[in-house]
Image (cartoon, rainbow, N blue to C red; front, side, top):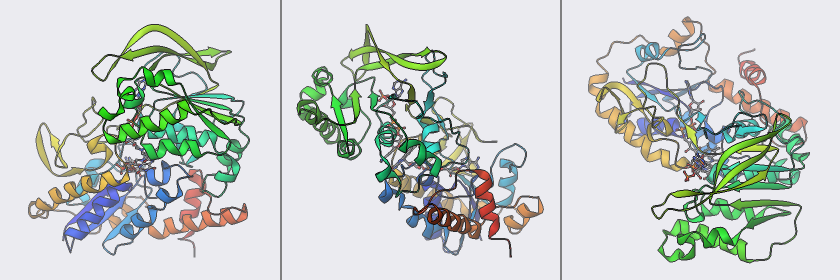
Length: 450
Ligand SMILES: Cc1cc2nc3c(=O)[nH]c(=O)nc-3n(C[C@H](O)[C@H](O)[C@H](O)COP(=O)(O)OP(=O)(O)OC[C@H]3O[C@@H](n4cnc5c(N)ncnc54)[C@H](O)[C@@H]3O)c2cc1C
Ligand SMILES: NC(=O)c1ccc[n+]([C@@H]2O[C@H](COP(=O)([O-])OP(=O)(O)OC[C@H]3O[C@@H](n4cnc5c(N)ncnc54)[C@H](OP(=O)(O)O)[C@@H]3O)[C@@H](O)[C@H]2O)c1
């Protein structure tokens, strides 16, 4: 009987487990995660006000409750103290599939990037998603104007969250401290800025249009940015997705905007060159104006503009991090692979696989991970006859416990869910997420207490 470890319980890990048990009637799968809670970015990335997408957790849950799948949370694969080294993990299973996502953010590499008040969107998202590693810096305290650098869907998420009010946020599972801070926020202007043109923005039209539905918030687009973009001037030449984006932007640029308390400004053709400070804290971003270079890129004009901001969120994409004992392509931030089989020195390494963002890079929606995971599971099962020859001890969970690790099992996670429902009831809200390691682990261990 094949025993497989899947490292990471985000969409790619869960879809890998699903594909394995669907394709092989005997395989046993353990899904390990460094967190005591499953679902990866579906729990800790998808914005709290996107409740429909968040409800995909219910689909992922059915996989983790499958009779041949076990969730083992609170187990971090790594060389550090209290972690499980990759080589040890390999010894416990016939095969390991790494589905660890892309945990960190890309850098801009410009002066002032690390100033107080400048954060990656990753850090802001972690805070409002109650990730237990998040730092609470009072992101929005004293902020009137915020700049979001980048025009992808994460930039749209964080801009929208900055504009949301208590009526829309309190029914969600947002942690109480973030709800209190965002409710007290005095942010009136959010500037989302792209270095290229409107027709090259990475956001999707549904997410873009949603900005126009926010209560008491107007979307401001400068028609000059559309005029500068050859694609936006003649949208008939554009692929459908970009054409729809441009049409939405044009509608905002041409209609007289209604008066509102808050504004979301969408700027294009401005590339960040420096973050400026006053009194040791960010006060503005300096942008150089750009023009299209005719090949999809831009060139600088030598003209500069400062946009005032007391909060800067750098939303320029995520990045994979190297994992203990695995090869890593540092240019791409991914693990080299062939159809999901990890490549060592260009050769497939039997028993080691990847799926999801660590395999493809940090792009694609939740559903994109399903075919990606299926490809990997199919490769693994094609290798099964060789893999089952490997000697390995009995139940890996028994071995882990004997070595002093005590994974959070499914009942522990259910206990966290109950604690979050109880916290919500106590606060007069629905479910409210536990935001720190201590409360998560206390809740998880409560299931073990008679
Ligand atoms: C902010 C944000 C919002 C998004 N919103 C949407 C949306 O609304 N709709 C949509 O369709 N897509 C959305 N996406 C995209 C979607 O979340 C990704 O496509 C998807 O989560 C990638 O899946 P993954 O399993 O590769 O990675 P992840 O979801 O990141 O899962 C990786 C898992 O691995 C675990 N892990 C990492 N390292 C270790 C280790 N060393 N040991 C053990 N475990 C480890 C992590 O804890 C995590 O649980 C969003 C992405 C981001 C960044
Ligand atoms: N609701 C949803 O469905 C949802 C929500 C969130 C995320 N997601 C998905 O998750 C994935 C990641 O999203 P993302 O927004 O993090 O990444 P993304 O889509 O890759 O967008 C990154 C943005 O950063 C810009 N950028 C990169 N380097 C820059 C630099 N040095 N200076 C200025 N701008 C720079 C990019 O501009 P260039 O194009 O010029 O490089 C782009 O606008 C995407 O596939 C996204 O669709 C989906």
